[in-house]
Image 1 (tube, rainbow, N blue to C red):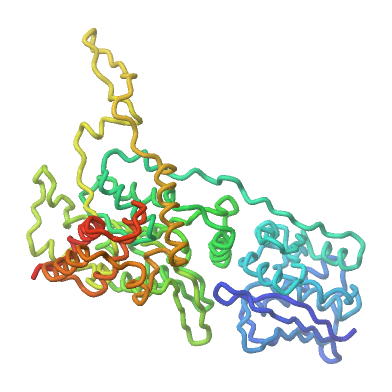
Image 2 (image 1 turned 60 degrees about the vertical axis):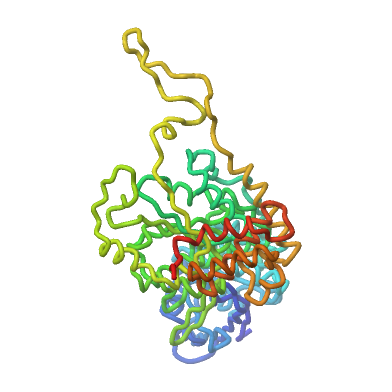
Length: 522
């Protein structure tokens, strides 16, 4: 058989388009010619395939070998085509049977010894293979990841020789059945945060409506601690959502099986570039905002970020998707994340602290805050000040008082009588959050933060007293039209948490309070 045809997959954003691998053996000078827009990694496959076949005791043809990766206008990258190219050469030269190749898809990088290595994007490729009804064959290292796709038939192989034995009906490969880990790693609990009742309330509202949130306060007040506990308040991912999150991580080569079903929490350093946030490269890969899809993106020390880097967040915050365009590639990645940011109130961080240690001038404070643009702040739904705690609140830990000095000899004895007790646990808050989200799903099919402007009059209309209160706030505090819509959406979430069908003045008053820090008095 001079021509063999096999099936494989490429990666383009979060989808895996079909690739047909055609291998033709002809007379002429010996050599392997790869066509179909292969990049350097794919062109190097000729050397890996030759060595792997020879070390597996197969004969590499001393003839002209032409490998076509179709469609020709789709760029091909990585070593995932090693396995289908090797099998195509073996089938075209009659060393393995070719009659059953059409029912399989193959992906895997070959070691020079013939062993199969892991490839990124296995989960996304398995989704496409399931849709087309073909069995997916890849390395054992990637098979467990691909098998997480419900309904997909995945075969894991240790080597090229094992795949050939399966196709020759000598030794069959076993289907891989992946069992998603139960529970995964424990999440941080909200009960660990002492005090900060107002900040916890803002965190609950953000979780219930999928709103963005900004914490401002002196160093060491618990801003980062609060942000790290937001994932523990969010409802569990559905099966489809977990697959979305895992697919993005798989395409980036960062999939961890133990985190299956967990909402991601990404906290990049403030020196990260714009490309690190949105993704990119000649072969576009997802950045931090896509890796935070369905989870939380935490930006600490917000004014320390390069202003041009922060500006790239504006479109994804509105649309929930990021489009990356390069000269030869265009890719789209999901970016439906919750933004949580933290900042100090001034350069030294102690503005407004009771100690009075701040010596920053008004000009320095204004320059510091102006590092974050107004349009970006306008897209943040909730702004909350996190003040310093007193010694009494800090002394309470896990419901027990601090150690006291005994009057006899000064020996320290630990108090064993519970005093105030810990705050609400994440599990208790998550019940209210889930109930509020259920109300939103039944009413509008999405969270309140995702409502479009045209949907707000239908779902977020306040009563007469509330409308009058909001109109007064707009006039006196100078809110923008975007702020007006976001106040209504936050008020709708507060009403959902209270189980109310109508947005009342008290709901609007609380929502307005979360934006007073951004107001521009007239």
